[in-house]
Every structure is written in structure tokens, then in C-alpha cells.
Amino acid sequence: MPGRDETDILHSWHRNADAWTRAVREELIESRRLITDQAIVDAVLDNRPRSVLDVGCGEGWLVRALAAHGIQAIGVDAVPALIEHAREGGGSFQVAAYDDLIAGRFSQRVEAVVCNFSLLGEASVERLLAALPSLLEADGRLIVQTVHPLIACGEHAYVDGWRMEAWTGFGAAFPAPAPWYFRTLASWIGLFATSGWQLCELREPLHPQTGRPASVIFVARR
Image (tube, rainbow, N blue to C red; front, side, top):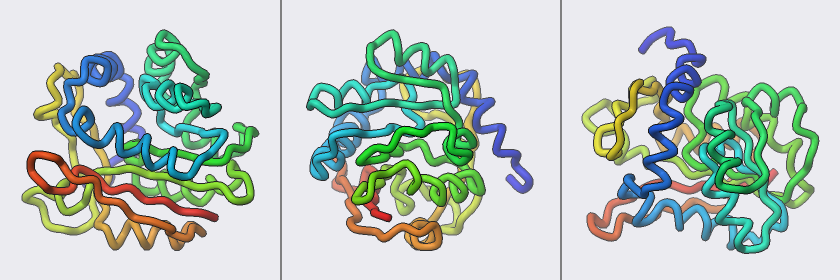
């Protein structure tokens, strides 16, 4: 999708907010139900943070899951409808886009920043990753879960580029396809390095039925 405006990502999520909330709360996404939700919770708990910022929190499930473990968690998302749904379920949430975090409009420092399937753009993600260290305490961690490139590549060539999510197999009626930027595993690792992060750990949670990677989790420090 040459020339794809990254604002199209947000436009699609404004339209898909209700469908996404339903899909998450009714556990309609098999990979989340079987492995990836617990995988990101485990990755956060393993680092024992007292405070967490969930960037791109969606309908807020992860904030509530971490709060149940005694963690002070706050979620931010650029889509007001998702924040409204998140507040319905309880927890601390506010509307904030990547640009708000990059510009320093979120002043609270935390011990961990989590991006759970929320790094969807190209240049916007590059700018965000470069800015996130300012939100972390001195020994804080960044924890990112995203689609596993080898699996998400599908029939496409294994090269960076824009893709379109048609929501096949998500179990809910999504009104708008969603653009997202595909990165190879090498590109992800390179992006962390050029953004000033030291990669501490890479996890590949396996689907319990297929034995194939359901996602990839990066844990990095400043």
C-alpha cells in the first residue's frame, strides 16, 4: 500500500472499537484465549514491576489483569470509544495518542511500558519507540508483544511493508479493514537497537495445538 497515510490506522479503529471490545470480552479470538493473553501477563509479572503503562490498551483487559496482581496499571489509547469501554470495566484509563506520549504530555514515570499488539504503524512506531525511555524509571523495561513475522507473513514476500487486516477468523463483524505495517524479525531487532533499546529477551509463545509461534515478545531496557 504505497503512500498509505498512517491516520488510516486510527480511522479503522474508530470504526472497529465496538467489534473489538466484543471480540475480546467474549473471547472470540482463539490465539488470545489459548496463549497470547497469558503470555503477555506472564512477561510483565516476570519483571515484577510496581507500575505499568499499557500503550494502546484497547478495551482495557490487560490493565485489569495486572491490577488483580497488585500492580498499579494505567492504560492509554487514541480511540475515545475504546477508552469508554475500558472505563466501563473498571481501571485507570485516559485518551492519549502516540503523539501525546512523544510530546511528553504523559508525565508519569513507570517501571514497565507494555505494547500488546498495539505497534501498528511505520514511522509513528519508530518515533514512539525513541520517545518511550522518557516514561520509564531508571531500570524500567519495555515489553512488546506482536504478531510473529514468520507466521503473519502468510503468502506475502518476507519483506517489510504495509498489509491489510481483513479480520478473518476473529469471530466478530468488523466494519472496516485495518492497515498495519509488517516487519521481519530482523527489522524489529534493528528497530529496537536504533531506537536506543537493549534487547534483554525474546520469547516465542507457541500455540498449544499447532506448535507454531502464536506471537513474539520482546523485552528491552534503556
